[in-house]
Image (cartoon, rainbow, N blue to C red):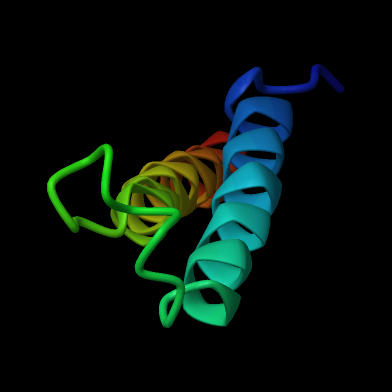
Length: 69
């Protein structure tokens, strides 16, 4: 049995995306932190993007594992 590379990549991006999303949600009231980014919560948005990409990779890995059997 071989390990599809999508599993570890998906897990890594999902974990980092979840941590970044939580950090963005916790610090969303801090106006001083987001002044440099034009008051855009960069942590929240990139966390959601990374979480979506990780979920897509995990879905592809799961779909490909069903095909192989």
